[in-house]
Length: 99
Image (cartoon, rainbow, N blue to C red; front, top):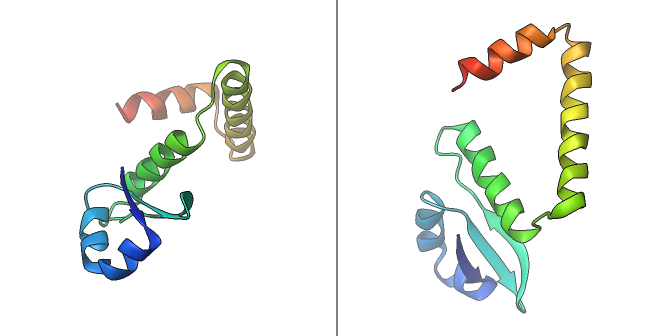
């Protein structure tokens, strides 16, 4: 991930946009992260993946905190799947189809 100060981003806007086509660009002000520029490049899944990588870098989870976060996400996915009428077999098939 490329990092630029807010002044660099302002003065080199075109370069920032070009760079964001290849990787997320973290904008800082006074040494603190204030914004991230991510290009969807026509692929929403790739943009989401890039966003998740940025979050992982800025706020990494470790140990019990990571386990709790994973359990929370899996629980929400399970509730959403149940609300949409998906069975365990449906979910397994969907996961395996994306590999």
